[in-house]
Length: 467
Image (cartoon, rainbow, N blue to C red; front, side, top):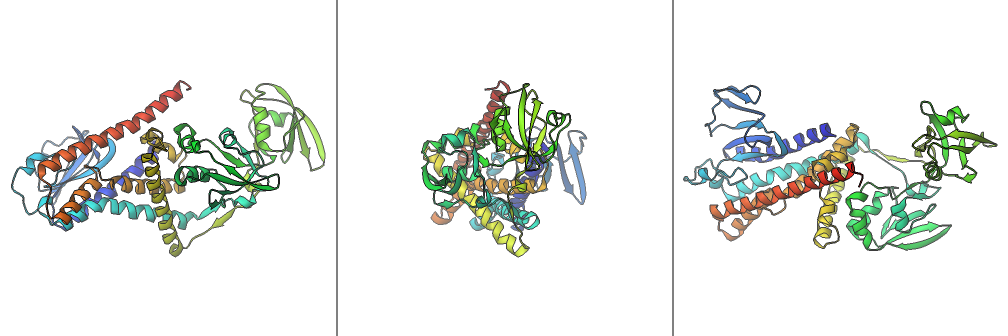
């Protein structure tokens, strides 16, 4: 997780800052620093190119001749605090809070001396790159890997329901037809989470025992489904028979005589035609010797005495969904993938905007929705899968663009807001006002970062103590 998160952040931050750096250089604006990650007090690495020669310094190899006072040459570096990055543009009030520079007369190479439209392009460069990158990566994932999904209509045995789905009124064997006004086409329980939280879906259309019926969704589930503790909980899944695929090492079931392709049909004489029913009973009989009935060769019924493991298992891997249901796969040409990637990216941004609206209305708690580096890292998973890595990087790129456009001083959106005010009114905010606004914005953003990461730490502490 740490490796994937670090690489993703390095790509996103570098390209975001490059989006500011390149327009600044095109408009002959001096850039004093270009940093990946923040460098309070010291940098891990820094370098400048002077008279065709690179001068490099680091915490491991300090160069005493490093020209610290050269403001006309860009310093490239890597900081030690992985919370973002920055470019320090001459003549601009930013998070560096270099107010001494602003006391002098404006110089032609400074940001403050450039026309407002050039300054606007410089400030929008970072989010523009992140938007383009997000759409591009979505498209490339579709082009390289395509999309595979399970059509809901193919889930012939209906669903099995976990406790959260049970609270919503779902039952084992139900077949979901629609969520709110959206037809349920691609089988995925996250579709309920999205439609209830983002689009305020208030009903499910289900088929139960051959009858189609409406199932109301209580408004309380907006808050329940958005709770941090419930984000990864299964609501429902595809119900399947329990057919043996392979055995684990020292499998109690194999020792008892169970064979591959046996179909488990009973546990201690209680019928268990589906896997989830067997698993539920098995968890209640840890370390016990039980009777398991299997159907062999579709005709023979065999009783086996099996000693359960200490975690309530029998050492068997069951056949997976693709053995029971036909999945669909959609492949994309490059010409198809690009518009499809843009559509998916815009859909994600629309969901983000709606989620913010739900938070402002008080329907989603901010404390349940925010997450720090730990939460983000967890989304990559513990296994390095390139498809998931690039998809997560696409999502984070769009999130970075979206968050940076918020009209908060110290973020790109705050600078853009002041520039638009200047362009409309013809009056430029004073340097002192910009200094105070940037200080306020920086404190606010820092507070949000501390709060979000504090929530991750608190969740970890609760996990350690089992609460």
